[in-house]
Image (cartoon, rainbow, N blue to C red; front, side, top):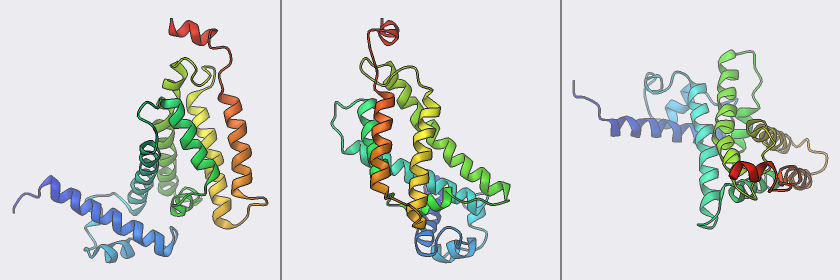
Length: 209
């Protein structure tokens, strides 16, 4: 039997992910089935499990990809000299003032079931967000004039993520009492006020010397 190349494996994996995204967009997360994904990708039943342990793992990878795509897009719109603090501010402003363009991601993260595999998949996505952004916060904390050094970087990332996640879920279900924009503007103002460094010649300055 001829050996399958890594390039071919990646093409098949990509085909499954793209098919899953189309199905999620068409049917919604809860209605997305393994059979629907395979039909969309025009593949046999065993194909998915050669690349992903389950449908939920596939959706987890897909969700993480969409988060990275959004960050890459925001970063590309910045200036070449922009530092971590400016990127974080712009990215946070985008998330807190505009509903997600990928509501399927909000629906996926909002799944609450008795199935440990589903909960583990959602937890892994949440973990990936903290892992992706905490180093940026820590780097900005080390910069003179950056983010205040007293905040727990991981907890700060998760706090903002909780607000963004909750906003998008309420927007998705039409249960916001005010509006996404109004809540987002207040959250952004509080967020900016909380992370603005005070006297950078204090503990931050000592760290830089």
